[in-house]
Length: 135
Image 1 (cartoon, rainbow, N blue to C red):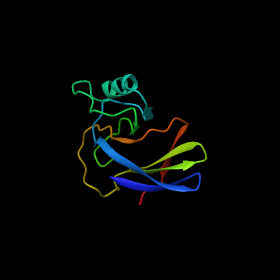
Image 2 (image 1 turned 135 degrees about the vertical axis):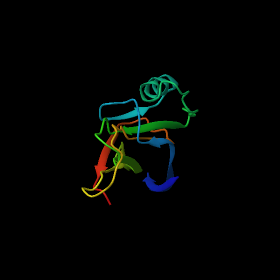
Image 3 (image 1 turned 120 degrees about the vertical axis):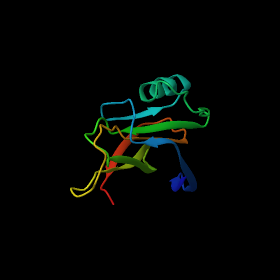
Image 4 (image 1 turned 45 degrees about the vertical axis):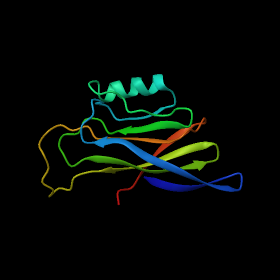
């Protein structure tokens, strides 16, 4: 889990971002960032990602889901990680990092489609995704 401090109306509050699923292969073939705030949105998002598996449980009365899909990549060695979130005014900003293989890295020779899906406290306002430079 990633705990982040957020200042809201002068009060400090912790925002916890918890992983739901992360890996090298999703059925989502195009790059995409998504948010689900209801069971119907979550079911639809999960079905586009993994049709054969049931969606993990999420308490939408207090939580929401954020996901980053990198889309189809030509080999292994690619990845994505949602690293945290912060409020920017009324907008929730979700940060993520893309990993890419180095020119000398030995990687699997297969198509991949990296993804990371997390749960976090419900936010009714706008959401923006920002990619960070690799570490």
